[in-house]
Amino acid sequence: MKLKKIPAEYQQALPILKKIEQAGHEAYFVGGSVRDVLLNQPIHDVDIATSAFPAEIKQIFSKTIDVGIEHGTVLVLERSGQYEITTFRTESIYQDFRRPEHVEFVRSLKEDLKRRDFTINAFAIREDGEIIDLFDGLKDLDDRILRAVGDPHERFYEDALRMMRGLRFVSQLGFDLEKETFSAIKENHQLLKKISIERINVEFVKLLLGNYRKKGVQTLVESQCFEYCPALAGKKEELLSFAALPEKVIKQESQAWVLLIDQLNLKEADIRPFLKEWKCSNEMIKTVQSVFYGLQIRKEQAFTADLLYQLGETQAILVEELLPFYGKTASLEKVLIDYHRLPIHSLKELAVNGNDLMTYFDKKPGKWLKEQLTSLEKAVIHQQVPNKKEELLQLAEQQQAK
Ligand SMILES: Nc1ccn([C@@H]2O[C@H](COP(=O)(O)OP(=O)(O)OP(=O)(O)O)[C@@H](O)[C@H]2O)c(=O)n1
Image (cartoon, rainbow, N blue to C red; front, top):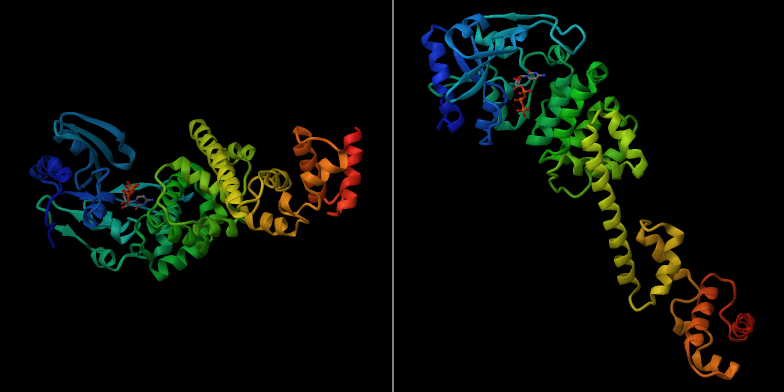
């Protein structure tokens, strides 16, 4: 099958493929960009794979930089742009589940594609637009399925990070993990212990920012991989409540951290240690702290506004009196229940009124009257005195005497 339309990013790189082919080698577009082209999504990096060995690539192009020569990658600088060109390779089992024990350069495209993580990442596109699909990735794209290439256990043993990659693709694409691939993740999640936090961080952040975050986080929980994420072990319920937040796409990494931190019920002082565990930069930590602060303020404002609205006509004094008992972010329901249990809910319900007090003390209205009424109201709310005329006048008399 051929690509219907070759995207501009590929058009631009075609002279590179042609040059390699003219020198008698094969060259293809591979990796994430092919997946994204087939999904009609924007392309990030154009990766090129070739049967030419690094030394041969360096002969073909005049300007090159060895960016990862031990893994077969040479950066080629051409007028049309810069491209990473990687020799077809196989990867034997990664000894420490981190880095390939050794990379072997090969001449066969199939060998290169079969060591890739998922079928939707294992396509190659030829210079004429032909899609090389050796593992039925097109069908999986169509069925919206993430399936490991070949034996999933082998793929995850080669690089355990692939389990986190799988979960982030669930979150980015909304695909389902194929049954055996998912079982292999559930069986091998402990391999993540060996993976550096920096690499887990990259995948986790992509997962938090995915368009299908809910599904991504739920699958992360189901797979139990979260137990190997920094500071998240045992936080199943918190993660599920994070997953249940309204499905609004998060655009900024800092916002994603703040929403997560909020669901974990962390305090401002916990943010730095939490993000340090995740090996976030100091700059990111600062940004998260300020976004978190902003969220707390908005929450307080929204809470008070909500409370005032629910209490309707009631005097602000009740809110003022009640709030300190709860902290400003207590559940609104709890405050309202307690509010309805109060002996009185407004000055109108107080057993004495302004006229009673003026008659009793034989005084004209003034500032004292308002202060006295407020003071009696507070005393009744705090149940320091019953809401009875006689007792209230007695208390007022004591207070006036002071
Ligand atoms: N642990 C990994 C990482 C990468 N790959 C292969 O290398 C390609 C390029 O990897 P990378 O650029 O890290 O990720 P992408 O799949 O391109 O995804 P994205 O661009 O969204 O990061 C992948 O498509 C996949 O074929 C792999 O098999 N195993």
